Amino acid sequence: MGVVPQLESAVKTDNGDDRKLIKAGDFAINSRSDRKGAGGISDYTGSCSMIITVLKPHSAISGKFYHYLLRSHYFSEEFYRNGYGIVDDLWSTKWKSMRNIYLPVPPRDEQDQIVRYLDWKTAAIDRLIRRYQEKVSVLNELKDTVIDHVVIRGRYSPQQEFCTYAHWNLCCPATWEVKRVREMFSFRRGLSITKENLEKEGIPVINYGQIHSKQNSMLGVTDDILRFVSPSYLYSNPSALVQKGDFIFADTSEDREGSGNCAYIDRDGKIFAGYHSIIAHAKDNLPERKYFAYLFRSPTWRHQIRKKVNGVKVYSVTQQILKDAFVVIPPEDEQREIVEYLDNRCYSIDSLIVKMQQKITLLQELKSTLISDVVTGKIDVRDAVIPTNPSME
Image (cartoon, rainbow, N blue to C red; front, side, top):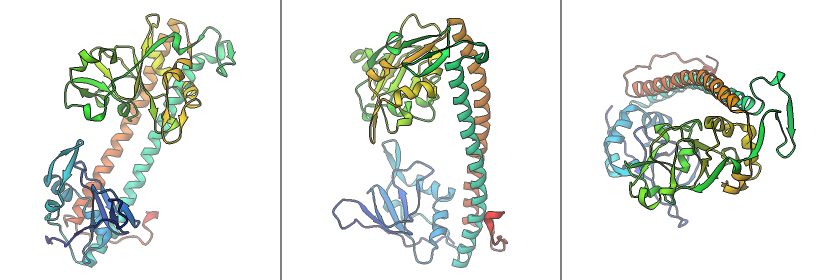
């Protein structure tokens, strides 16, 4: 235990594309990774980016053992400690420092037993994680279904009379209005900046990336989706500031599913719309603006946007597409009732989602701790009896 394996840094490919050669069985690790690291064994032979450090296991080390070893807490801590700075908000590590990290290397037969044991135990943990992830997916689908039904057909569907609007292929309560978005909102652009213009502190800004992030519920602003820019933009670009009740739409999406994603501004204070964004400013005659936050999240409403966007790898959402979309508008008292109802239903569903996500986090931590304890010998598995068919356990 405690030797330094003779690892080799991979060489460039010979085709002149300035990329590294990687072979099946090599371990690739992102040299600009965060504290948890980002790496694993490659199943393929090919090329990878020059920022990837490619390690070739010493002949005395099992490739799969090496995979577990370099994903342990032990290695992650050393990897982080050998970092030398921040590049693009990611921790960077020099190969010359990294190659001097000491690693525990048991005899080969123990390595093989450790691999078998961890394959068995981590597979069982992964199955539990997948079950909770499936539950989270079902709950999110339920949430979207509830929102979609209520904002399109109202709370009391069986008792209501419906009108069909051919121009939207929609059936909604007869007491509701149908208007173009342009009648309810005015539009303007966000800041013309890039990622390089972001700062560690300053005036909050919501960019394209944060609009598309999983942390954005589209029902309000959380600190998770805020970044910062210089206060100088208050003087040079005041028109990119948003107000409470406004919406910030992403003007591009990497897939059709994300077309129409937006952030609803539900707080006071200075916030900028950032790069690749469109501001939808609510006009004064809009009483219950959170109703529109729920409507804009509705799959039925978003279908209007998705069928009009153009693109292959990137889909463009223009102001014209947003302006031409239709909205359904219940009477004011019904809008408030819908918002109160959906706030309560979504809170209940979100509470269940949080519980599932907490279980997932605990299982991921258990898996990480188990790997670290086994590969460093804190848990002795040499005499562990492993089932013939572990997947059935």
